[in-house]
Length: 118
Image: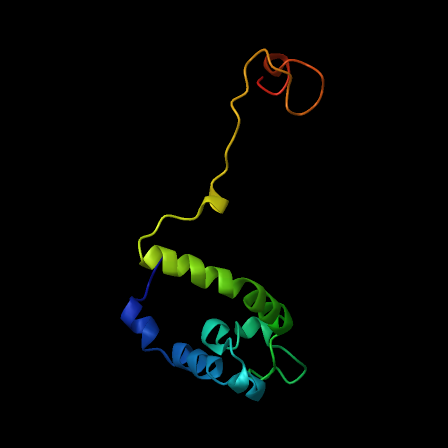
């Protein structure tokens, strides 16, 4: 049962203490090109013996690899959406229609109707 309002929550000392810890990330984050995406990551991934919020996230290396590899493609997709362009044909899957009596594409040697169509 909810006993407090949303305003009570966002004005609570606990909420503000959490927010203050969240913005205190590791100094290495300042020079990271992806800081605007991860914002130092979730605090639960920034742990160490001292339980300092300034500890680098254990997922940092993975996030950097992910963003470096996929961000360029995400930007292309975002531009296509913004410009209201159709996605290019590489995203369209063309499926050959399989007849019921054709051989099954799973290469079982059975007719499609007696194999994967079931």
